[in-house]
Length: 162
Image 1 (cartoon, rainbow, N blue to C red):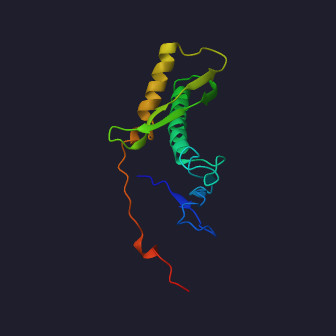
Image 2: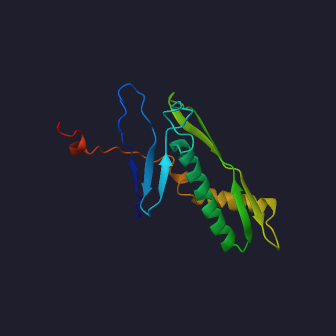
Image 3: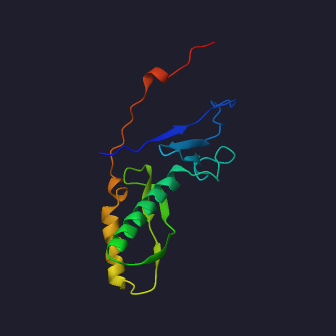
């Protein structure tokens, strides 16, 4: 069983906070060393309290589905002997009310466009089959029903007053 780590950090700095006027900008730190600026979506939290240049959780969700599908597709295509020159997916996620009336990412549509190199290209049926296999194998697509647990670290709740 593999574990994948991400540390999310945010600092209040000099912001008042309780008036709801604080920056939602934060940073994702990944176990391989990458750091990604993140924020609430400007569709959810208005400017200047969100950062449109940063990645928001909804975009990351869409990107992880698209990336996982692409990586599986490329692996399957290589195994089958198809020479892939390029792959581009303009994936779109829709946030709407789910059956329980809660806001959720209710649909993600992948639109992969694949360019093949010289030689034989897959037929439309073969291409659809490759994408179907990639979708069935994608860890992230298989995880959207995942149980999400929250285990607060209680000893870090407050700092003693100076």
